[in-house]
Length: 227
Image (cartoon, rainbow, N blue to C red; front, side, top):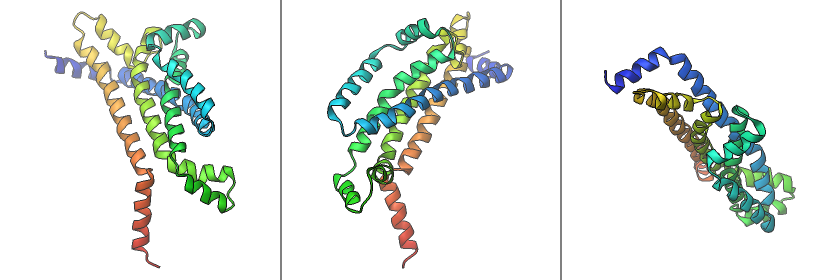
């Protein structure tokens, strides 16, 4: 029996188990990025106009990003113990930098003339933020979320070493088997597919919400409905 046949046999016999671990894997990655976004997006907006503070914040997040994943998990495990919470917290730390950096860059990239125009029209700082800066920087922020999600999906597989479950469990089972190539692939293929699908979906959203795309749509709507 070749590897492909063994792989199909494994999926047919363990479909429910593979799906459960796939779902668990995705949730851990998703929660880690979600919690990081809740912190990093407001923080990125806050430091966008504060050069000295932004340098300190980026220094800290850069240091966190350089810590190897296994080392991070080992350190957090000493505090939180084994399980999914430790992995989610590690993913939170690893997701901070890409989301923070892109939020900062997106807010900073908004043309100053637009901000001055908003102020001249009597808009408050809050209105300028939500009606001008965030809409124009949304695609850049989504690019940071996209990067964080893809990174998190890969790191989550390592979480199996501290008992978090996920598709990494299947891969490790394969490495421990005498002839476990098919089992390794049974875990590795869904992990890769998850990263590819998430990257493609986030890339589509990023392009769809880009200022250039929305401007073309608005021009097309106006052309189709002349006054």
